[in-house]
Length: 90
Image (cartoon, rainbow, N blue to C red):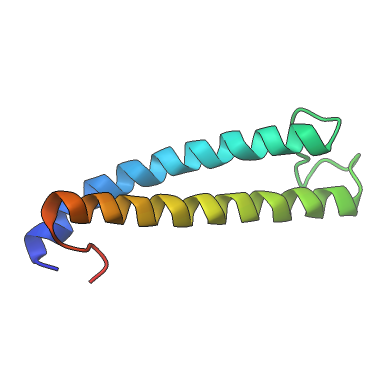
């Protein structure tokens, strides 16, 4: 990838990353509401939640964020390639 394309991709990647984080947070919140009786997932410092529930929430949140990040990164790279003719990862 040319230096100009790398520079052009940076703001594009940053914006898509921020949007992906917001989408992942919304997806996780909806999933958590459906599998638990709580609106919000437990925080590590909230002692009223058992370890099992805390670790389940953390694992689920990590999985959701990883899947959304992969989808957003690949989708953004494909869109960038369509617009510029260059793949941003090369």
